[in-house]
Image (cartoon, rainbow, N blue to C red):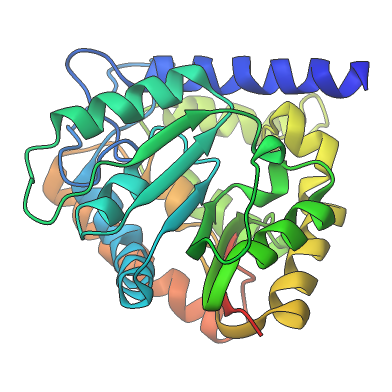
Length: 312
């Protein structure tokens, strides 16, 4: 129990630090407000990440729109698990649905509340209710939510199977559950990521540095950096047991409506392309189509998996 409590504290700190690097008085990240996100392109080798709502919409805007439209059709109350700084909750709330967002990061919840308070789109808007809390501590009641959604959420949760059963019980008849998880790169996903990252100009690395990195890897002096996991992603075994529990629950316990795999390589590549906007946006459109084609043909797996299911 002590180890779990420590991991939860570290999880909160982990995401507090991320949101603090993503938002300042001058910038609003896409994940905090889909409509008001401000553009920020790092100069040099800044530790800050790119914020470019136009590029984000090119790469994954259609998918986000489909999810929101499906939630709106279902109506009722919406529970956003691990809501982060609240971008998804906020957009749903702008469409007249009462949304409840839970997250363990105090910084993320403070940003979410700030974005809701500043929201200039008042028509049909119902202010979301945000709570800073470990989602396992949510006191679920039966037949409460029409939709439960989690964007990069469920693979952070300990006692996941028990938690999912509670979610299912709290759904109304024909209730909707949506999970959006990163499930890791396949071999060819990584291959194309390295190819396009190597070819295209990158604001984090010069071509000389790219060549040196390849040489170091070839000579086994340095290993390519793997994905960084949060403390609770490690605890829950994100790409192992958690991923399997999620897939089984959404396809067996629930009635699957749609399964979407996307971004074999396009998100990390496009988020680092250096150059004028017109160049970056053209590259993003080309690679988004190519990425989708490779996944459709079974060449690539796709780093993200979205499953939309309804209550049986």
